[in-house]
Length: 259
Ligand code: ADP
Ligand code: MG
Image 1 (tube, helix red, strand yellow):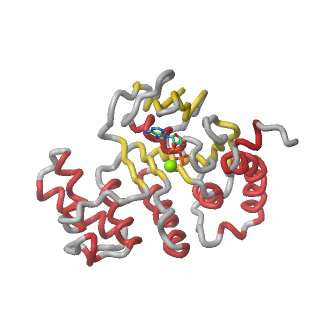
Image 2: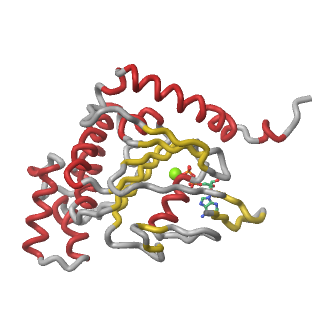
């Protein structure tokens, strides 16, 4: 796939030659330096944007727009401030024409699963960052998407909240095992969560490596990083990622000879 943007200085190629297949039920993370095109890639897969060449398919069907069986979670939560936690979680069901009573039942059940049963009537501004993230996750999982796309969902959270949220995400994922594509710039998070980690180059983004993560499940994100197998995998992938992070920070160093 290729995706270019028109800019004042001409065309900027954000993605070029990207090729990725994810198996049903697989948890795949994409890591790459800032600006390499990760969010652009997710935009193409979600159907929010179109590639200039190439195609995206989900379950063998070409993506031509936003699909109802695909869920998204972004870094910035998309809750409506004038609606309570419960109303926010019910909203996607109401969009899908689920009757009010059933939507409320399912909404309450999912708020319970993310540990917020007691906060159903709170408004987003009355909740902490971690709690708002939980509401966002409930509001996405409530319609049981077959595919879940996440773009650095936890990067604005503090370290402890983040580890708890990562564990919760894995628990919730194991309930009905949607296919997951998880975007992050954090390699530890990627290795901890995933069945497979894909490494992208500095922009224009390409896939430069794929690593299976054969760590046993269920995993505890607070513990797994002390496992020697984890350290070894992290080290191997970092070897590949390090050069790209350097290139992303100072691209001119690569093209200009040092005199
Ligand atoms: P990442 O998510 O990996 O940090 P992005 O996918 O957001 O990177 O962006 C990749 C590159 O494409 C960046 O250089 C960014 O500036 C550029 N870009 C993204 N969206 C647009 C746009 N709408 N118009 C022009 N350039 C864009
Ligand atoms: Mg991004």
